[in-house]
Image 1 (cartoon, helix red, strand yellow):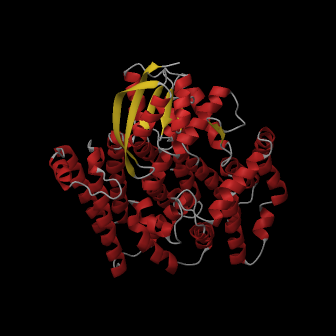
Image 2 (cartoon, one colour):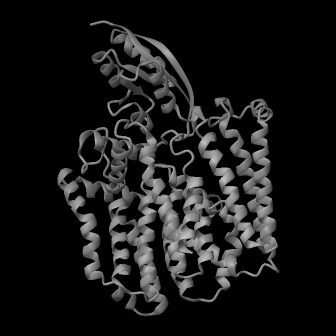
Image 3 (cartoon, helix red, strand yellow):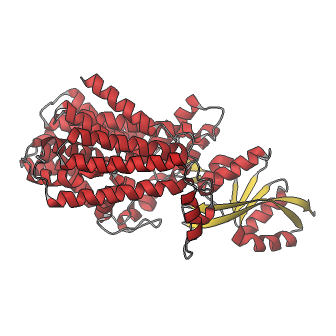
Length: 556
């Protein structure tokens, strides 16, 4: 039975995770920074010091970089600029997270319900997004689940060497991946469980004196090595520059008020979010058993902490999503839907409106016209929108109608208490939505990926060997796709570099073009425009015009 369920989960997860792994261009900014730093490890042979070009990256530990570098060395050693190989660790970690969610659920619920919990997690927007990005978060989720699996077994009374090892090995891996975040989440869970039971026996059963040695043995050797290599800068920057500022205030324009994650849950957990409200009502009324205590300890203290911390990003709460998936699956199995509440009906109606909006909005992603996307302060041309609607293919229209119909059917099945059919409808909705979204719709947005467009142009014109100087456009994806020696500069430094290396190409944002021409004239350089790229920089939320120039005459 276990193997059948695991096979179902692997098949379903691969179906929704694999499309787009190779076709979606490198994303800015975190993914491209991770991939570029991993690429430089391979290029330099230095697997201790983490760098983006010449700049040290001491914000996060080395775990994700090591796994990415190993994967690329195995799968794509001759093409270091191919992003798909860097994404394989996140893909495999997402698969493992679904299976581990099933394993944890089996400790508390029957296997069929555990199977549904895995399907609900694999169907969610957030895990699907993380499976497609070469970052640390999917790997971190696996370390959390390994730790929680050991903790759950121990809390249930399955005290053994394996339970102890799962807990401390997972904790050690989490430190190697992202520092103290997971230990804090786990500590909050343990404290909460001890408060529920009003004793400290759980702590004794985890044998922390010897367990800390295991976690330390996994994470400490690299910390010592990088501290030596960086002359003590790693811990100073990791804690003082990255962690503490996030705790004290919003950084990098990511400051959000408390309640942000709760509001985002309906989208981030979509389409599985259909079940959130009725599951919450059931959970509140449910018997306060061992499952109730474990889920509360896993989710509530960590969620409150993350809501209080000013810096917020959607993926910060990902370690809590498996617990939500398990809770939802269990609630759906136990809830009596003969008298579904008015609140649940209103919520499911709101979910259907949200679903229809997401499905319809996805049609516009493949639009080739940059004018469809308005920069701040400008309105979208309604004529262009209308023309795009008219150009929607019959296939797109049929898929959109089908998805909306399945969403409506899921709501009706929920109201009638046909839970298995409802969950299957949600799974079908996820498959039909995410496969075209990642396989074709997002890759088709050429204007949203200027770095990929530039790299394709340079390759097509046999200019990829020319060094690239970029002025005014410094996205990490440009460095990853065009080479570590890509020179990111201001106008003065860029002109100096161009004078020293006149065979280089210059990429410059249109807003800086006049000042650049003035500086090159003063430096005795004559340039010629060879291509213009009309793009949209989603990292900054504004339209972007980039010009590619070449030197035609250089005066000594």
